[in-house]
Image (cartoon, rainbow, N blue to C red; front, side, top):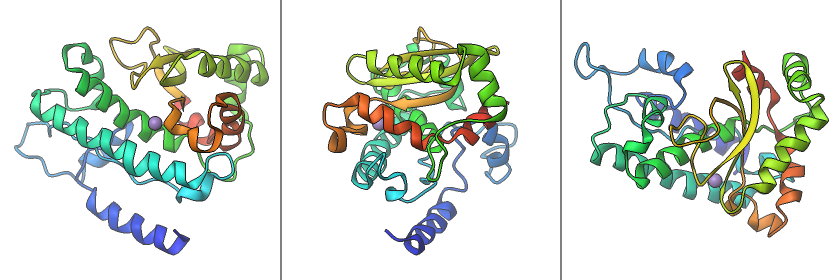
Length: 243
Ligand code: MN3
């Protein structure tokens, strides 16, 4: 897909998803301005939308190959979104935001938990990566990581360890729990906003360590995937989330 096709696809999709509530609470207010309220005074029901990938599939090469990105986004993530919306509908979810659902996710099915988590986690993950990155944060993110973990290098070490120690499928996270930074991991598509998660807090950085995220290029070498992933981390997005 070249840039022209990408832009064309972006515009078409953007036009098609205007009415869908955003996955992020901080975007929900902007999105609700364009949404049609079904009844005055009634909140719109929760809908997961697969937001457009912010870059072409090949943009994160060589750290993440184009085919992995395409399958990951257009098959795996798309399926989570579709199944999450089915579960939300079938189980009569009353929450109007993903965060609201996650706070009580233990009351819903495994289908709701796995797919709502998958829908939300990947939307975050795509934004936390970008082409043309320097590989290191600056300013307040650097200060926060140095303050919390001793140095940026030490932070990377602890985060990579969390990613490596997650047995099987899951995610590594950097979270802010009331201003205190913490690193940990979750199984499957759980995330630190879920009541079932031992790790709690607002996600600032997330790394997908499911084999579907790296196996085509890296096979069993998760360490190499994690090492190369640092080159595409979007520290500007981390900074936005930290403030
Ligand atoms: Mn994934």
